[in-house]
Length: 117
Image (cartoon, helix red, strand yellow):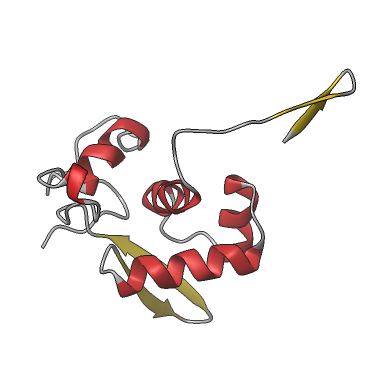
């Protein structure tokens, strides 16, 4: 909620925090939880919970690299809600994750942080 001139207005967005975290991980698979939290605008604890949800559902795989985690997104998985059946998360990521910084397509056809089956 936001206050404008003494009146309280409700604010909302189309994307959930789960979608925002998934997009942030696809953009930067080596980001720390602290960085993801700052990008999404939620607490580190909430981010950890969302990452655990995404990992449990198979949308994200976490790999330990030294003292840090690296994440891979699985774009081939379908959305969980029956109304979105037949659409995979790769379609959402295609809207929000920019191609590689070099502008060159990835030889494997996969964006950084996005793992094909």
